[in-house]
Length: 271
Ligand SMILES: Nc1ncnc2c1ncn2[C@@H]1O[C@H](COP(=O)(O)OP(=O)(O)O)[C@@H](O)[C@H]1O
Ligand SMILES: [Mg+2]
Image (cartoon, rainbow, N blue to C red; front, side, top):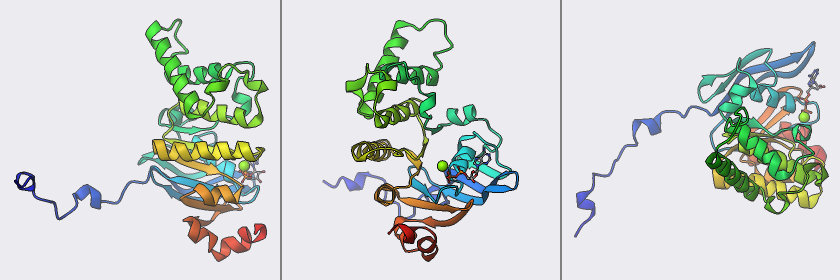
């Protein structure tokens, strides 16, 4: 018996929605941020799609961190627009952007060094679930928080260090705690500013493996700043090169590594 005969005819045309151009997940339109006469970010336009793993590279002082600050909302732009999922968020403060899932890693100084790994992540989960303003938490809500903390510790491979005081952990583990706290906010766009800075080889491998798993297993959109070109070319699907506040090049790893402007200005010197 033919099963196909009972089914709807096969579509020969894709549905209209599939033909329409996709709304970019994150778009920056001619964004600038000046500090006095210094143009830290100078007329940058940029597009990123959902589920992308994208690196931002460029020499020190190129404007990479400032660019991230404009996305997270830490700084308002001097001019230009920031559009997230079609919505103009240029004027929105950090908290509103966090609620939309635009989350940067916290600096180590924002992590609570006297508390354990478990407690730090718990504070993150309670904040994300808006439980920390309540005078008491029900037993079921407490159990749900504990389950979520356990889940996050498992994702970042820190279950075995749950009760360790964060201030006494190795640098690499502290940065992984930062990522876990960021994950507690359920990021849709995760911003990582030099996630492997100051790490040894083993710690770097763990962080890179974590970033790769977040992208592959959870389809998370990740934008990261990184100096180590092995990491950049190892995991990024797209690379944006900033130089003196401007986009020098933007494209796939292949296109970037073959771009004469990039080679001349940047990559050539480290080969
Ligand atoms: N808050 C600030 N006030 C004044 N100048 C700043 C500020 N933040 C960054 N800058 C300057 O902007 C330029 C770009 O800095 P930054 O975005 O940190 O670059 P990168 O992260 O690529 O190294 C640098 O010249 C830096 O000194
Ligand atoms: Mg920086």
